[in-house]
Image (cartoon, rainbow, N blue to C red; front, top):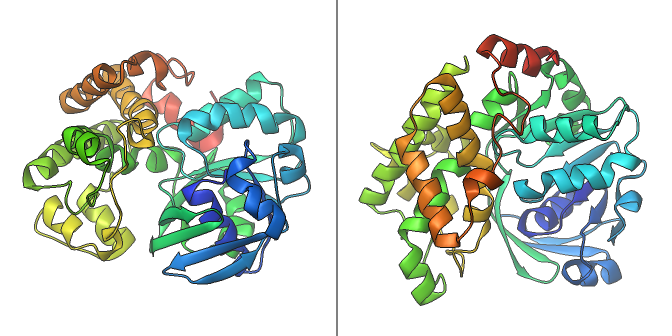
Length: 360
């Protein structure tokens, strides 16, 4: 299968090499040359960790048209705050029959992406889908070298609308059976575990990150029992909003068992029972995607839907507010909301009809 990977960060390079290993023809796009300079020369990406070896891609490029032209599957692997920009860049070059998957969509990713394409007048017969989380825990270790700490057992994915899910089965699932088709993008968007595991942990470890430049294990040292209790509360509020939208949520503890086969009496114990988190270090700065992506693109939309549906999210709101103060950015304005997603004032039935059938 001819696949384009859009974004050459921690996840993009790992995914490009993984797809090549599995026999796909892979192009890799990145907006800047610096990150992919070595790959442009060698056409090789080396994997370490759970998979080891060097794997060849067709080419790496800073020309998005070249990257996506003639590709059946387009895997977008960029922070969620860049989704609109990517939609604008690829809009002129999309072709009938192509499948675009956001890896992951965070909360409302596919809705935002489709809305952007419609505003740009794109009338091609394409499928836009979003994954619930990224398939790997991975990090770049050197130019053209990515370490995969763990491949998740399964990752839910769904198209918008859900009537196009069959297109995922003939493309994405054909080459990556780790994905499982979910009922709709409410399920993938609001089972966004990054919203639970990233922002609060980073904020509650901010002093340690700033004083040590992140020289500690993010999950295994950064999540103590008291921090885990905050995460449990964030998770509770997330699940309540999801239930109000008519979908059964997967709790964070249940997700750890689903994705990594780990269990525990509580969230703290389950996290610390996960060998997939071993060796994952904290970011060197709080100016990191765990805040810059997950607050505006995960927590803000969950809070926004909660407000529209009459569900209080005080813990989530507190994290958004503290992050806004610490980063000197108003994430309430910068983030996805029911207004920016075009869903303000819609009933639950209307929202569900949109994600299931595409009728709004």
